[in-house]
Length: 337
Ligand code: EPU
Image (cartoon, rainbow, N blue to C red):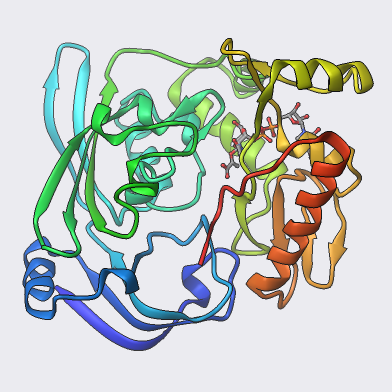
């Protein structure tokens, strides 16, 4: 199936809920039909964008090209061997439904990534991560199709160049491919990752340590701190956590002894951007309908009818202030269109 619609509203397809339109919108769950369409149409790849759940994107204007929305959503067990299972999930499957499926079926490895908005296909693009786990730890392969030639590809984990909120799909392959499915390698043997913060204690509040309770604890932590995008438009963390030279980190710690930092053991420290923005006094502030979330300063919100430009302008003020106060340049995590 391949559905094409023109002048398509994106308000429900971006979690900031900006009222923008795409010149064309193509929804597909067939690699075959997509390949035929590509070879017949020979589209201009500079005017193509793939949109999953729209949970990491900021539209500043209407999109003057074609937006693809993959709707492949099958889950298939490819292989069960020793203590591992290989599962292929369609790119259009809602990420949290995939996590629920894994928890339900006692497949270990994605439970810490519960409640992250978006789709399976978006998970490798920015290598989603939370509470000490990252998608790259469990991804075996990423399958997709080139949007210029219609050729299919299958990339092994090591070929995806995964980094912190980064991958080949945000760089060399940006806007050139559409991911159709992701193959995950999960454990069928009990195996938890509870080292992050107070996660283990939070799990125990729900009872024994098991997959269901880890999922519940992570869901509770996220729900308490992060605004529900269906109620208040947002795209999760707006900025990446910056990595700064150890010398700068030590200077800042003398001035701010409570400043958190994670030693990356390569001469740099990763510091929470949320802490910097909070310390600079932005927490809970609003400028018009653009706001800094009251419980987690790393999240910028659309509290009413803000536009992408309103949010960007608030982000620019924050970036300048953080540069002036701490000498640190913040980098956006969201993709700006
Ligand atoms: N902090 C503050 N004030 C704030 C926010 C945070 O002081 O307003 C402090 C916290 O007290 C804590 C530290 O900063 O000491 C870290 O905060 P938190 O555990 O909330 O995590 P984070 O570094 O702010 C990252 C990810 C989140 C992920 C959490 C949990 C990035 C950019 N963000 O946030 O990912 O859920 O860790 O693992 O790496 C996302 O990418 O959209 C996202 C939500």
